[in-house]
Length: 128
Image 1 (cartoon, rainbow, N blue to C red):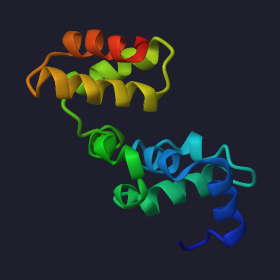
Image 2 (image 1 turned 45 degrees about the vertical axis):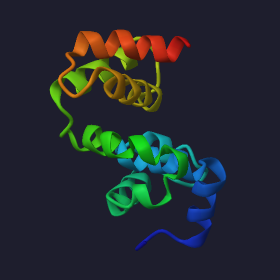
Image 3 (image 1 turned 180 degrees about the vertical axis):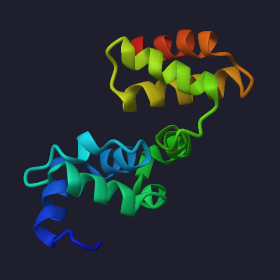
Image 4 (image 1 turned 90 degrees about the vertical axis):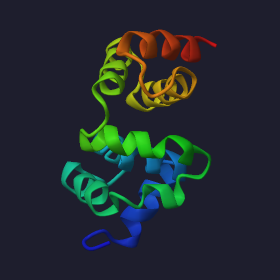
């Protein structure tokens, strides 16, 4: 990656697991990447932008929800899904937790589920 040296890359990988990094990239979560020592907002933005689309390659166990997270990060997720994730984050859950819960709820409820149903099922997933 241009402009990101080995020291910064090692810092990111020592702070975030591969799965966490994949989630941060998919969700376009620059703040999560910037938690690594020596990584400021501009470098975090560059990392997220340059690795966009490559997150599934190293998502590991999280690969099942990475497509949904990419849609959320790109603002292309269906409105009920985006609304449900937003509602859960407003309740205090991290964006990653909310996206995982909504992805599980979507599998259970089906593609046509409305935001209310996804929120209820997502809350059950988070509580259980």
